[in-house]
Amino acid sequence: MRLLSRKIYRAFPELDQFDDSTCKRYINRTKQMSTTGMGCLLMILVFIASFIAWVFIEYNAIQVGVFWALEKLGMRVGPYTEIFIFLIAFSGYIWFPWIMLLLARDRWLYTQIKKQLKGVGCRECGYCLVGLPINETRFNGFVVCPECNSENFFNDRSLTRADIDPTFVSS
Ligand SMILES: [Zn+2]
Image (cartoon, rainbow, N blue to C red; front, side):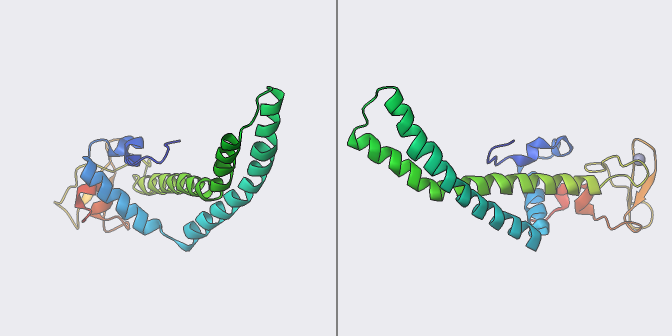
């Protein structure tokens, strides 16, 4: 898992040939296209579930577990240590759901980019057409698949130039 990565696009070899600013525009476009009710609902559920999970983690692992372990080790828990442990435990109601939310958002974006790249596959063999040269000589332009030689016309499919060539994505 790419932890809160800012360069999530580098996980996709299809985008390797494009520079950072082009990839960022492409990712932003994917973000805009995938900000759906379903996505938002998923994020809210992750947040709530993480909050509830922390109730159990906080009580069982920290309040009971940590103090039990410290006692077993024969370590005396001073008042400052106790305050420190409680601070981590209670602040977890804020940071734990946020971290889980960011991880879930990253994961969601990753699957959306993957889905989008997959959608730009050759109609015959599914080979990814992203980054291939656009032939403008006939009709409204087309892309020739290097794997099976089929011509993928923009007119036949709901493809746009920006789907094939991320440099066409406007900022
Ligand atoms: Zn093909």
